[in-house]
Image 1 (tube, rainbow, N blue to C red):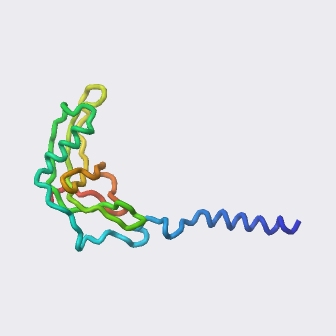
Image 2 (tube, helix red, strand yellow):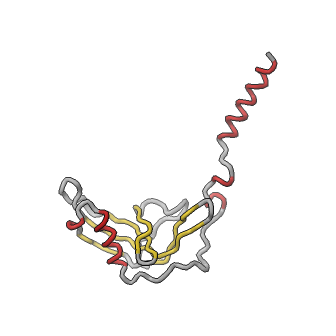
Image 3 (cartoon, one colour):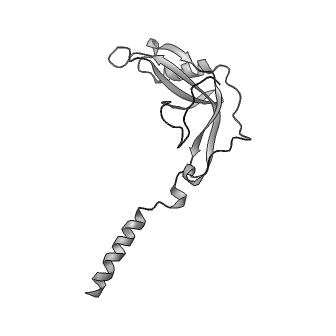
Length: 144
């Protein structure tokens, strides 16, 4: 009977310790890690950024021929996290583009803005600019 009394606190203790995330598993921003951009190699400025982004859209839109390109922001130096556990970042240039294209039903879906990270002449990351790049760091769609 006495072993049952000791097992209840042990079960509670184990269940509570399972809720605590080990330090090595926490995102780096919580640990205070942010990419160091002081000596970062962003690569060459993408002079042909409009063509690079249009190429991405042509490969990813449902009806690429219907694309109406509204605007492109000029690239700016930026970074994103490649691997939060090994503290690896991707450096490059970002630009935002607004496009209106037809959806699966054949109608225009309205203007949509996307954020692009360009490195060595290619889009390496694309996302909605309303979402953060990583915790506490949001895309900037103003001209670089």
